[in-house]
Image (cartoon, rainbow, N blue to C red; front, side, top):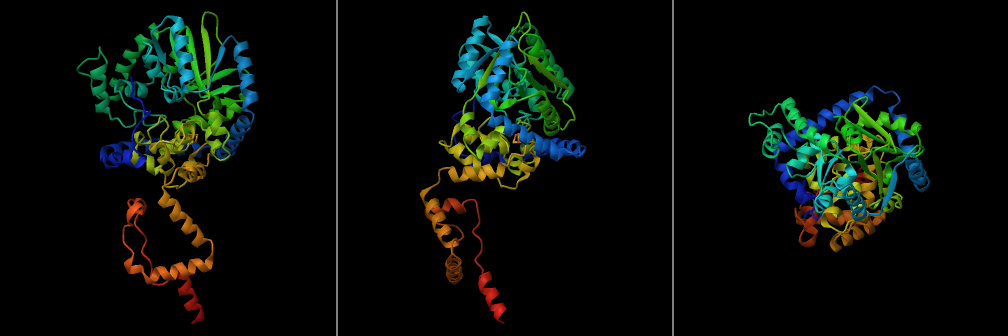
Length: 463
Ligand code: SF4
C-alpha cells in the first residue's frame, strides 16, 4: 500500500532541503525531465498550428467550465441512457464511501486499478484497505511506488525518483515469484512486472479507473495510456468503477479531437499515445459506475484568477520544464500534484491552513517556463502571485510591506528614503535581525550604492 501524503509535516523549503543535496536524485531528475522535454519540443515543433491548437484547448475548457452545470447534467443523462450509473461525490470521504460500497456489493476483496490522479487525490487505496479490500496498481510506475510503500513524485512518471537497481530490489523483495537472478535490465524488470500483473488481471472481477476526458454529448469516457494495462482493466472485469473530477468534461467529440492532439505531445512527447480506450455505459453482463468528484473543485471554479487551474489535463509538461521541480523533486510538494500545477492546485483544493500548503505558492522562481509549456495556456505565474497575496503572512512581513508600499507610492518619499539609505549604508547588516531574519535567511540583502541613480542623473544632467 503506498504511503499517504495527508498530514505531511514541514514547509516546501524544509521538505526540499534534503532533495537538493542529493546529487544522484538531481541527476536522475535532470536526465528524465530533459529527455521528455526534448521529445515534447520536437513533436510540438512539427505542428505549425500548435499555438492555435493551444488557444482552442484553452477556449474549449473555459467554455465548458462556464457551463459546467449544464454539461454535467447532459453527461449524467447520456451515461444513464447507455446503461451506466452516475454517483455524485462532494468530497473525498463521500467518493471513498461510494466506491467501497460498490466493491463490497460485488463480494470481491481485490480490485485492479488503472493509473488515476483522482483516486490518489482522495487516497482511495487506503480507504479500501480499511475495509479489507486490496487495490492493485497496474501501471508500471504506480506499481513500483505501491510495492515500495512510497510516494509518487511526478504526474506522468510517478517513480521518476527511482533508478533501475532500486526497482530491482523492490521487485525481489515484494514479488513472491520473481527469480533471484533478476537483472536490472529494463526488459527483465518489465517482464517481471508483466507476469506479476497478468495473474491479477485474469482473476479480478472489479476494476477502478479515472479518465482523461468525458464527452458530455454521448457519455463517453476516454483513457490514454502507453502500456496496455488500462485496456485490460477496462475490458476484462465484470464491474468497472471510474472516479473522475468534474472538470474533465468536454462538450463534444469535436472538442475531444483538439485534446487528442494536445495531450500525447505534451505528456510523453508522442504524436499519438499507444492505447486510447473509450467506453460508453455498460455492455450486457458488465456494470459501469461513474463517480463524479468535486472535492474542492467548485470552490476553485468560484475564484476568478485560480479557476484556470481547472483547465489542467495533467500532461506534466510544466513539471518537466520547471527549474524548481528539477532540483527539489516531487515529494517536497507533499501532494499527488507536484511541480508548478501542484503549487497552484493543491493550495486551492486543500486550502492554505497548513504550513506546507501555505508555502506551495512560493515554490517557484516565476520564470514563466510552465506557462509557455502548458498546452491549455494556464498562466501559472499569475495564479502563484495571486495565491501569494492570499497566503498567511507574518505580522513583521505585513508591516514591512506596508512601509515599502507607502514609500514606493510617492516618488519624493522614495528619493528621500534612498538618500537616507546611502547615508547609513555602512551600518546596514548583511542579515536582518529578529522576525525580519526570515527574509534574509534565504536571500542576500542588496548592497546600497554610494549614490542613488536619481541623484547621479540629476548631477550629470546639471553638469
Ligand atoms: S498545468 Fe498545463 S502543463 Fe501543467 S500538467 Fe496541467 S495542462 Fe500540463
